[in-house]
Length: 208
Image (cartoon, rainbow, N blue to C red; front, side, top):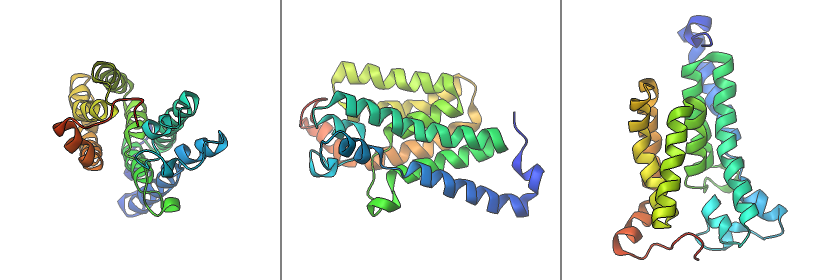
């Protein structure tokens, strides 16, 4: 394990350092890959189709599975990269701060007037980087619900709700409260989806 950041710098210098780590992770997380990928594929502005979201599910509504898959990998990857770099340099606390920063960057990117995605791929990416056994279980949860119910939003909510359980079962308790915070934000971002799931009007995967 990398050294504990406050032990390296002392708390007076560690706090500004953690703030800087959060800021850099935010910038990494704020890269709008869904928008960039759809433009690179000649699919136009993803914000003008479907839900207007820049995430994987809405990119899939362009009809390009390749663009959707690439968006999924890049959105997950940016969260993982931010976490892994912070962990390698400064340890667990910095990794968790980076996870939060990258996640907030995806949800509220400064480049898009703070109108970003719903954070599911980035959430899975940071969980995989923080503790891969729980991350794999989270991905398996998403896949199980996605194939079983064909609703991306329901799969995302199930994965977010169960990540704290997977962390506890795989003995990664230090990350549970972070997972609860990020999962709560996912539920907040999916409030409209929750209403549609409840009244039976939520679109299935692949539908407009």
